[in-house]
Image (tube, rainbow, N blue to C red):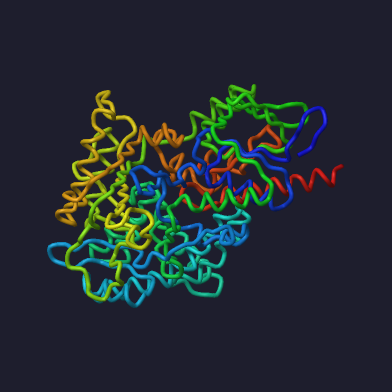
Length: 542
């Protein structure tokens, strides 16, 4: 930290979610002086774990980590050395039995997965799935490469340029065939998830499982360009989702240890109230009464929160108003029910060749037809509760017993498509327990009798996700993950370069920015790289 007229950090990071901590850790490892300010008393934002019930370690947000394991972040920051350990989730997904077919079990081993698909859906779909994984693995790898780079057309052209080889074309001639294959691949990448599934498969059971996996990104699978959200399933056969030992917040703990080792400071209970200019640098004023000056500020909080902080600091109000009206936060995404129970869910008709933990390492995709998804999404769109919520159950205490007391289990249930604002002016406080009852009943439908063993539950409806975790509108992805707000459009074309026009030295990170929500660390890494590049340019100028 520099001293002079007043102390100045190289960088102040506003927001101690995992992306903010990732950005800070990259800068600190590069020798920069860094300070993180976080409004919450618990660091990590939605990647944090607390004791909700005696003896239970309960996630406040995310539970399974899919994308960050496919990134350079863990190795770059030496997080394994800081105590971060992942357990492979294998099986990685499970879809319950229907009245006419056994369950679908998705294993890291592709042969085992195809055998399950054949037993449930037939040999044709099993063969199609094998081909699907072959085609979509390089496509998803290209997408992941694009996620960890700034969102500009040149880089995307490099990342996606070779994908014509994953498609076919009847066009003749070297140039014509190459062009045709690239157009075919692009068409599938831009397709809706539902149309992709209808092209590849015949079984509604299989289509529903993959559609529900893809819909974890937010949009319904009939939306344009949602096909890659389903295609990401192919990478699960390379490296499955990971469960951080001790809870999702173990990632945050490792990041905090790295920051401490590098001499960075992290202040919790220190919400920022303004971000404004202070001569040739920036000043972040906090509700703790402290002002922190820095050459660079990385705003890793919600984009609307960032705009409010800039407005309080005197930034152009007309410009801020325009951005606010053109960024779509949506009307909420879903709710979570955290359950402490005597027993794990017991699903019927499971195969006999499963590991000792059965399917409890997996995302239990509790949907067997896509109409269930469509009805839930349609209800939320008009401010109603779904008749049957679409649920994902995660029972990770089966593979990480330290999450719960002996002879007890922790089950996290995510139920998508619950609106932030209910129709008729109704209040979530009046419907919270009713909605939670419906979520538990849905798990009971596939694991009869489970509810009899429930001893504790903690309910997080969209209003509580907003107030506790700063998720505006109850949207866990910050802003909508539709194609018009992804890549070079996220969260707005003016702001998509992780920068704010007219605010040199201010960078953006967090789920509001490219590549969006989920546990990736990508936006924190991109913002840190931009900050380091900027400091090198300033050094050359001096």
